[in-house]
Length: 494
Image (cartoon, rainbow, N blue to C red; front, top):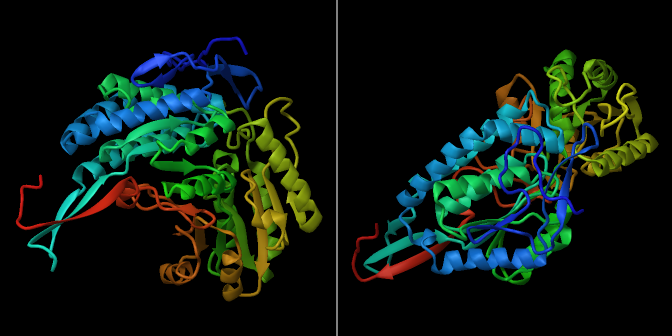
């Protein structure tokens, strides 16, 4: 592509044709650009500079220099906090652009986009506040010294790699954790949704973040792998597929590097007898369309009593058929497009697989009234075998598998029969019963009556859903190393 970078309508990134390295906007070494395609129209709506391996190395070198010899890690926490408050203020002014960018790049509903943008800014600011109040130096009793201290220090240079489904909130969270703890950062956004990272970079520039503390390079898979392999990276914070997470873990493990991985899911909702069929239908009709099913924690397996299976499947199907499928900018749309062509093809592949082993109740095709864009009908499979591919593999689309079981014990067994363990739900009006069941389900998060997440609390998964946690103090601590210090007398440790 020879075209210089440009913005979608309503987005005003200043330098889409450049990368940001060492405090400077510069042309990418590759000389190439990444096109941004609208999943609503299949038209090109923007373009940004494509970073190659040389750009990745330059960004790491700048971040390394800023960490090893720059002022940021050596500032008082209050000084970093003051600059980060300026970043927050700038980001708040850009929320309308962030909302437009999300809809343009990945087809998120315009009706939902302002809330997504506000959530991202809010997460940045909440993490800043958690880090500003964190006790980085604590005196402890010790038999080895008169005065012992446990000190939390920044882990170093962080590669922050964010996915395309919630690019702003996830990148903002990674950057906030890194900055408040004193780390330096290389932002590597998804090539499908890079604009949010550009706005974060502009906010850092406007707030006076020192050169090299935050860098921005957007590249494809080979360049991204090169970034992770660079020994100047101390930690990778990655949100994305389990396959990519395994690669990152193997690379970082080879040099005992640090990493946080928030990966895939195949989360189960267990329905108890006191939860009515209508309640289940209404809940799933609100849940499955969220981000067109492109949510790692999505409740994609519904485990129900066998005696109620058919009526529940029919009731949910009835609600699914009422959903308005349409373009993201239509305020009445309830289910927008999938983010890209390859994602649509992936979902269609799984639907074909599902037809071989389960009963297709509704959906499964492209909407007849839309002749462009990457749309798929909300889809239900009934009488699903939990050993089948559609029950075991992450589809990342609006596809629900309903699995019949004999009793609660089998429901818990089925929920746990998965390589994943990210989220889940217990559908019941009995909070004690929900607690008792939830304690037996091996997931990093689980809620009563729906998909629930609070980013002030730890978020992450068991098994192949990830390593470590994001959110709150648990998320912050992943950007810190722990040092034990033994002295002959107490000191001023402020």
